[in-house]
Length: 320
Image (cartoon, rainbow, N blue to C red; front, top):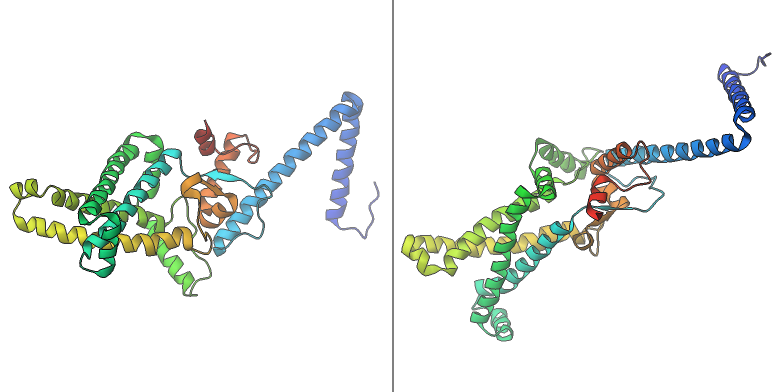
């Protein structure tokens, strides 16, 4: 075959490949029939489109994670990922309900002589009634704390989340990366997996707070028993620890946790993940790009390379 001297080698190669493909297709049409070949062509094109779509999506995610921003190329299909199981969400609801009861009734008990506390006690039936409500919240806190120990040791979902929440050296690096990014020193912020260092801090702060609050609270609740075992100054220490840790926990929840979870511009006015357990693909790419990459990789592996047609293994387990 004569070649045009003005054409590049790449163009010539492309023409040769195209002609060979066309010849092969014509031969297949003669041997197998036009209908069979046309059907095979459509299937191959569909698979190729899916593969290209997945690869573009993963590439966009990596690019977005590198500059700590939303990707310019968003996934074409709106999808939600199961982030928290039903059991996880129930624990969280019981926990924050108990904490709200404890905060609402505990702060006035810390400042009983203030004018606003007097108004509060008037509407709740007095100090004794507020103390009773406070103990109801304490029972909820103790119950969810005890169940959570079972959850993270005996239930697969709990063990998985607990392992992901363990502090790692990467968390320290992420802190420095983010601080550098916020100060304009670095152009790249931290990219997070399932849990960021902020979420890990929240989790372990609750752990520490529950140990202090439950231990000191039980000592104050059963003062006679405490005094029969320990000297009085232990009760005084318990009172101060319970009072101050309660105020610290209240400020941490309202100022730190509420802002990061709900009042942050990315989530305002509220993130509904605590109730639905789901997160959109847009938010998971932005907030947890490394987890998203892992889900897509596992999905491709479990579906034989097609990462778009079936939910992730984690989502399938949740929906069973």
